[in-house]
Amino acid sequence: MSVGFRIFQSITRPAKEIVSLFQGLPVANIADNMGRLYCVESEIRPFNKVPLLGTAFTVKVAGGDNLMFHKAIELAQPGDVIVVNGFGAERALCGGLMMETARQKGIRGFVIDGYIRDNDDILNMTDFSCYARGLTGNGPYKNGPGEIGGPVALGKQVVMPGDIIVGDADGIIVVPKDDAERIALESRKLHSLEQEKLAAYANGNVNREWLYDALKSKGCEIID
Image (cartoon, rainbow, N blue to C red; front, top):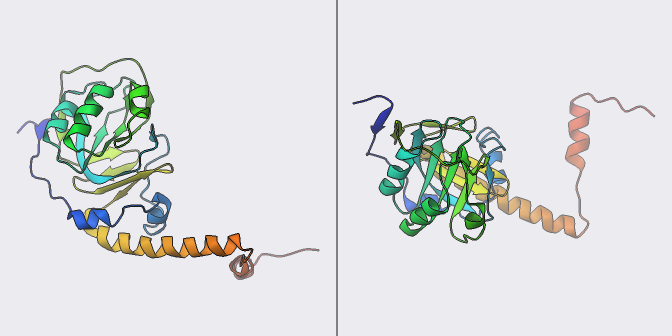
């Protein structure tokens, strides 16, 4: 086995029923149920408005090289999200052709700690999502090395194969697969509560007692 140039083929994915529990949940509500510690940094941003939900299929590539990214598209399954650690090189790791190939396979999207190109192609996609650090016209090399199916770093988060990836306009959150069902159910309760609050606020029923209680408990002095 060659460390740095290898493919781990065995990936344990959560049941589709568990993944589907996150459908329609805002990233912010999920984050609030995870200690507000699991969102990917904001520099990795969406390049279209398609919500993202799927299981992580992880790839680590050499800076500016997408050989193993191509292999990952071949190996990934429908419902997967390909997550790429691009090691910072400002060279596009994919464009419209790779996205269309992945879309045809039923892959839900790409999340790339790196750069992409063909922005117009991405904007026109209605069922495929892409997040990345930025755009550049400079294309990649195809020499390797790289790894598929191991842990990767993604915007100051660690992603394990099979983790659940959720993305919306606020960004990306990584949900560990072993905790996913509990987090989804708790997040649904929180989302319902927020919807009730929004409805009350719309009718002018705004309760700010929590603010006064918090200031008092923390010893805030109010001076006339």
